[in-house]
Image (cartoon, rainbow, N blue to C red; front, side, top):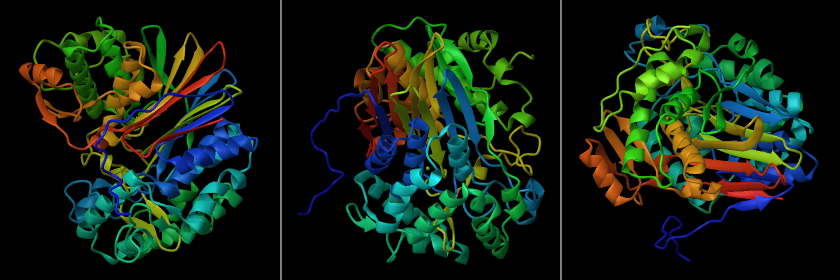
Length: 536
């Protein structure tokens, strides 16, 4: 039958999924089921998250890969832990070195924006500290899908085809040949419903599993990555990989109407979400979102992004602290700048003193908020020959300015867009949440949290609600089903409202909330993608 798997003429509805023993919510059904499979084999939520994350590198390669970065928030044994597994720039790179090659800004593709990948190190670190099963068992589903293949899901197929069109025009050198051989066999992207397999992915994942990621940083895979980089004049070298370790960090938070909203500290942009939430904390919000609430949300987000762009960097290079940016005095100063009309944001002065997201929880109370990305879809356009490792292009986010806190420098981590979120109340866990999608992510966090706390929406409805996205200046995109009367009223306030035809621009999220009295888990998944909740 000739069917269009992206054509949906009728409105549909999902319900919140409830379970007691475990839940895994991801943007791809096969990955969610992989996590559930590991739970049923005796693993905990951390094992399930690792299994789903590894599986996503295979079943959703348009958004993440083995050569990407990761962040995680883990609730276990009554405490929240943070893991920053983003990589740093190679030792040999610098703005001056790029200028000598003719660059005037950070490029998107090739070796220049490639930083050390952190995702494999994240899997190993999580398994070692909190997991119950060996990596060989948690990565087994991903290895099987890579080896035997799987049918391409609808939204995955859509973005794969889009990426192929872009890369066919943008990637011209011989260093990109392996990307096309891996992800466009036969000279095209795989179609929706078509089976795609990658034995190279399987072999690489098996090596990572058997060596607890050592092979990726100090073994055979590291050698292949370094050799490929050297062959084409890349900056990434063997010692950059060998000396890399992920960082356990203390999560940061703000209080919001009796809850605590948690994020990973910079170099991630989670602090942007917290700054916006802190600003909104001082406003009265009605039980149903109105024009004024939307206006204030957008203005708060613009101010938070302006400050994020000015100050967020690798923590070692920031000229102000997260505490200063999250102080009530700074929030009050920024809040006071929000009036009746849309503004063009400028940074304030603080007081001195392409991604996948998944959530997992088990019946023992362990919960994980996990995010992983290659950035800008498939990333740099580089695939290490014979490995299936698509190298990310996270370095594209560096400022091409030595004087900027986020300026490119050797062994420095860039401003990072991927952010996992977590919600607690009175020191007890409510659960993990997240919305992937580049600079949409803090905006999605603000909207989902307010949908939950202010508007009492269940996890599925909180994700279903129509979203807006501030782009730049006074420009705001709204989804096709965004209320027209609110859009028109926002335009009268000076916002440049533009209707987007594609809801894929507005992020893809997952939520799991835990009932503190019964332990029952309630989960929602993203309607804007191939999202699924696997429950037990």
